[in-house]
Structure formats: C-alpha cells, structure tokens
Length: 304
Image (cartoon, rainbow, N blue to C red):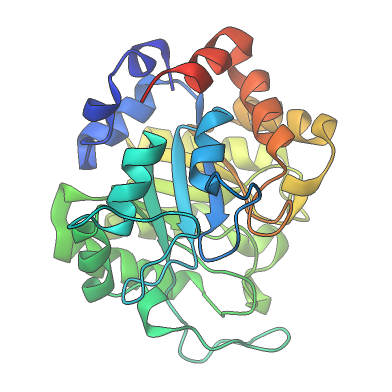
C-alpha cells in the first residue's frame, strides 16, 4: 500500500474493517496488491503456506478462493487453540484477508458443463456472517469457471450481504471472466449500467478484468469504468483471472502498468500460475512495476 499504509503496524492493519479499510486502499493511490489462492490446495513450499509466501513477495491482501465457511481450511495453516483459520492466516501473514463467495444464477444460458457449488461457498447472508465472524475483512462476490454466476445474481447477493453486515465488511463485486454465462462474455462482462446497480446495492469496490485478460477488454474500456466508479465515490479492482498469472514477467508488468493507467485502486493477481497460486516471480514483478523496489522490498521485509 502507500507509504502511510506501510507505516502501520500489522496489529493495526489487521483490525481495519469496512470504511477504514476502503479509505486505506484509496490513500495508496493504485499501489495495493491482492494475491488470490486456492486455499485447500497444497502449498508450493512444503513448510511455508501460500498466504505467507504471498505476503513475503509483497502482497498487501490475501484472498482465499474455494473457502468453505462450514469446512474452513487453508493448506499449511494450523490455528492455535480458540483461533479460527482466517485469524491464523492473518497472524502468520500479517496481511488483510478476504474470501470469495459465489452467487449461483437460477437459470442462466450456460456455456459448457456446469459444476455444483458447495453450500459453504455460496454468497448468502448466512455464509457472509460466518466468514466475517471467522475473521474475514472483505468479501469478494464473484464466480469461478463453470459455476454459472451472472450479474443479476451478484447484485442480489451484494444487497443481501450489505443488509446483513452493514459497514462492518468491505464488499468487492464483479466478474473476472464470463463464469459460464454466454450473454456476459467478452466486452459484455461489465457495463456502466451494471456498475450502477452494484453500487446501489452496496458494493464498495467494483471488480473488472484487467486490460488484456479478457477479449475486448482494453485500457480505454476499463478507464471509462474506473472514471465512472470513482465519480460515484467507490473503488475499482482489476483482476488477472484467466491464468495469465502464469505468463512471463514481461506480460505481467505490461498488465500492471495498463491497469495503473486505467485508474485501478487494487491490483489482483490470480491463483492459476501453478496449482492454486500465481507464479511467485510474477507477484514480485507486479509489485515492482507499480511501486518500485524500495516500497516492494520494504513491504516484503516488514516484520510481523
């Protein structure tokens, strides 16, 4: 995050909730990195968990994908007595932690074979409450491939979770890819009308694909979305959610600078570089591209 945020002690940073966390990200002026990981999958390093590795490479926020609120588990993380799994991740990584929850469309026009979503991963008010009580500081309402998440269901989930948790949680909402919905593929994945509905429902941060990660999504396209969102007082998270987190570092640096030029507030890097985690060098390369070596190394080395 910005110099001001980097100066916060971890015990303060980990207590940030709701509006305070949003304002901290805003203050960072496009220098916040969020690293997503598939939490049940085996760690890349046998004795270091993926959340700890992401933090060590410069990530500011850890996002847990495939997190089940009824069967909470992050590979390589063993909570202390009386501690939740998410609280253990926060303690060991010293980072803000969020979870993905997914709303399922009732009858979408679906592309390909649809997968059944476990109850503990669904974007319901009950699951959001459990995630919050387990320590999550933000909830991302989005969809994995083959699940079948459409924008109308995302809008409904935003309103439901905002009603349940008020301003105690940060809500990020949107799609990194079509998630199986034919009518919301490519440049139809997000529009200003969709953004308006998400903001009205209570989203704090709008999630959009990073330029170059989805067909038709250009710098100019995302710049228009960013301007619209910022005019309405909210933030934007650009995402690498189409496996390019496993590309070469030059591609990653190009995406990073394009996202910054477009006006993003949070830079997301996805979980499909290797099994369940971005290629480590790409997290580091992304960080250096958007904030230079001094702030990157400082973020990496800051004691927990």
